[in-house]
Image (cartoon, rainbow, N blue to C red; front, side, top):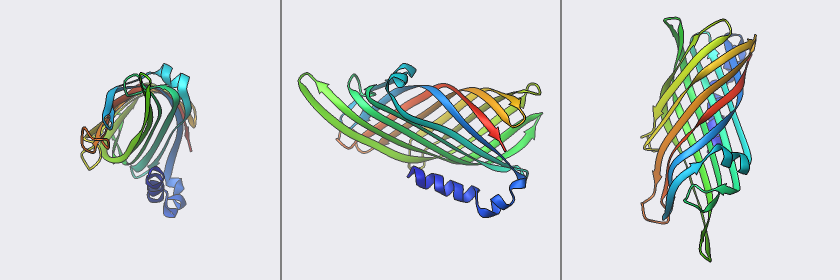
Length: 247
């Protein structure tokens, strides 16, 4: 599903006609890193508990990860943004289900259409699109001498709508704030995103940015109290830093 969503977004936004008129576009490619804390609660079947994964857990049990953002802005004001983040924590990670152990994967893809306008010396990007989640957990339960394993996960897609505001503080510095809400469209009950920080335009086509981001979601699937039930009610938050390349 994530690859399908990404391919669809690219085919819509980067059609041959779009690439042929590339002189009318500005693009930004921005790899970034996030030092997150994941907190909240989750339930796999009949087993549930508090989520508590901090940057130390991620550092000690990190298996793989990738975080990338790609934006395009047309001179007409219309544009797009694609964002992908993936995190895999190995078997040694502290589990989100109480004090058991788990192999944990979280993948998030965003694809939105944007429209930019100016207001009071600020740039505002209104956007709407989708946020796709893919969560998998393999939980090893140890209760005294007994052991067991639960493999459970879910993937879903939420519609989102939001706005990004930025204003130049000096020739080199910009302040940015962004927020969106979504859900209720057959995916999660509710999802939200909030972030803010600074960008430093150190070179002509390269910027360095640092922001604080919080991303929340409340999702349920199946019937509570049964083995098929899945709940994921969490907030992922932390410092985000990256480099943006404009071309």
